[in-house]
Length: 446
Image (cartoon, rainbow, N blue to C red; front, side, top):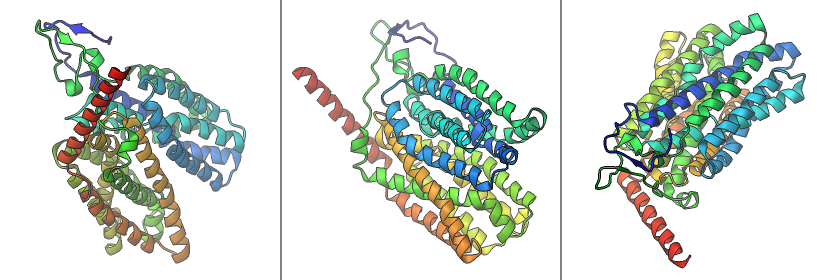
């Protein structure tokens, strides 16, 4: 797909808007990463631990490092995304990730294990749907941005069944060969997928959402310069919406991560389910999160975003309160919790890129989303540690769940305190006018 300066009026519009190919690229990339690393690593970790005879803390420490590294690198990825072409960032991230996976398959001890996880985490931080793909999609969609982002973050849903496949393949070929094979797949396929990542639609004779291009008097499409839409990161950080949204995401990720890490332990030790039954609740939560991802994305296109965020916070709060008042001694009794928590957890995922664009525009969206992701991940690291500490002190999870319910409830007024969509749109237009005026003034003096 080459950039166009002019396109004849008779040129037919493509049947599928190119932005949807970018959405498909995100789905495919994150399906592979989920199978190879994010969810797939749970199968490999057991085999690696058994092969070397390590304690559980060795693998647990590596997974904690992965989480913390993501929080540190996300702001850096966002800044890079505002300065380099997305395809360049994705290409080199695929190279780093692929080499890291090959290295993981060749480890010979704890040091090389941690080094491989470190390298893979750097690569995946710039390839996952946390920052890069949502920011890119926000440049291609406006009216359908929520729907597009909701689909773009579905990769883990499609990739999670590969955990079962990984276990079977390990028995036949060994964990080293399977991990190295995933590394080769990433090096070949995901470097090729990176070519899909076109930065903006305007240089290609397109407009966001597939709207027809502007035309001159002869009916030829006019190549337009992408508008400077929105505010820079520094200005965004001076708004109350930035910090309210940061607080909202941090609170929600703290609740999500805290309970997800301890979910199986809770249902076995506090509720009395078997390990198999507890695993069923975990799997159902993850798959139902797909409904939340798509549903919340769609609703963000249709209604006031504050209402969507408040409903999502209410669902997570209700899921915690349900566990406090109902002892889920069977999977059937756990289903109301599973539905509320799973859909609520999934609903948070598409909000960063979608609402980042709605609130602040796309001018410095990479930096803004990177900062939001960094704060969210930091809270996500604290949540499981807090819940474990409360369990160690009290002997059960009840006190910790009360605190999580309280945090979830606080996120409802936090969401409602943000500015209206009309106010945010007016602020973005003002920033555009001021940026254009400053550019004209600099041109006169240049």
